[in-house]
Image 1 (tube, rainbow, N blue to C red):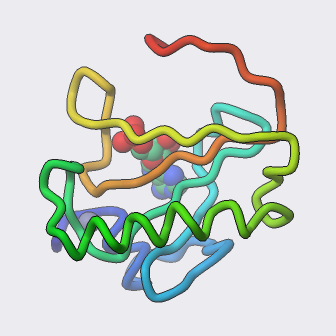
Image 2: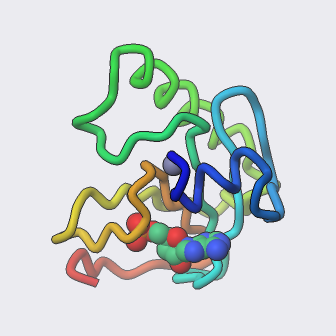
Image 3: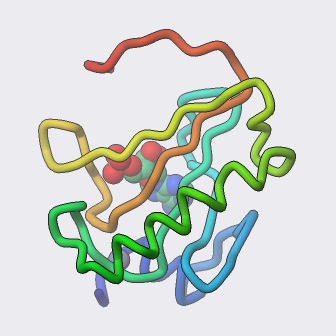
Amino acid sequence: MSDCLFCKFVSGEFATTKVFENDDFIIIRDINPQAANHFLAIPKKHYKLLADMTEEDSLTLGRILKTIPTLEDLLGLNGGYRLVINQGDDAGQTVHHLHIHILSGQKMGWNPAG
Ligand code: AMP
Ligand code: ZN
């Protein structure tokens, strides 16, 4: 997608610090952290919603979910962590390229309405 911020991070057209990268996805720090550590896991392929995933995309997402806990030290996951995937307007999704928020490094309350 030519006008997608996260596609530009993936391609390198916009500079960002990738704390991790493999064939499936990149991880960057969120610019507006909502926890002591706040990362974004961004699949390299552009799609907006879980509902838009192909079978292959779902396998990729599965691999991403399996990889995140292997990055315990890098992402500060040892005390526990939270993953969030906002979907659509009511959830407050602002970047229309599927991404997983990774929140860690502190005790978190439960405020789903944020
Ligand atoms: P969402 O609201 O789920 O779509 O999440 C989008 C996230 O992208 C928000 O948490 C923003 O803070 C984050 N974000 C927006 N622009 C940037 C940027 N340039 N670099 C890093 N994170 C960003
Ligand atoms: Zn994109």
